[in-house]
Image (cartoon, rainbow, N blue to C red; front, side):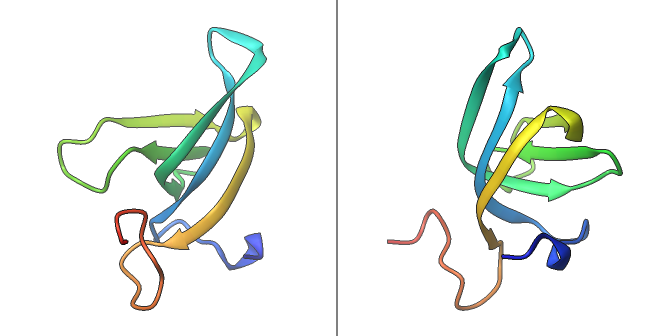
Length: 83
């Protein structure tokens, strides 16, 4: 997916790699996360799109990769929980 097609009003499922807040020389790989691009300058990340899910915010300067994106709730896009 071209990053220019991503906007901050949609939720996506995908893989996120960030710098480890405890040790910036290490990386954390977050698989099967729901992400939102925003608020400006931040990436919003959660393990599930439910009201009780813990939400984490990462400054974009510490986000190393966001890959395997699929829009949440779009017919024809396979969700992590499907099959």
